[in-house]
Image (cartoon, rainbow, N blue to C red):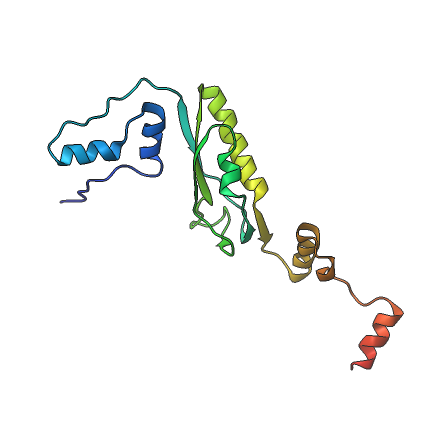
Length: 171
């Protein structure tokens, strides 16, 4: 049985991880090899530790995301890639279709520093995202008021005399 044959690099950020940590492009080396040439680049000693974080969002509609420039400005962030978009309906962690919302490649001088930076970047992404909850219309109105600052959309049953009179006249 024949399964797969491809001249491609590995999955997310493999190219970038090697480029950042060893100063070598796997893509350039692959092209050199395909042309029958010896790859030109010489890997350097590891200059830093690299890793990636793939934050997930709760279920709901994505209303806002942190700006890529803000994430890229955090210590050690080398690359930012979004997998979701404004208006997307995220299925949340209980779904088998649950996908990460983004990916960030991060570097640091030590493994301990890398772990701290990965946690910081993930927190910044999740904190900067606004996702409407999958909830009842009444709770959605509370969300609009609390998070979006739209008090005019808050749930208000008619309890004032003027409100009852106005409701009675329209019947």
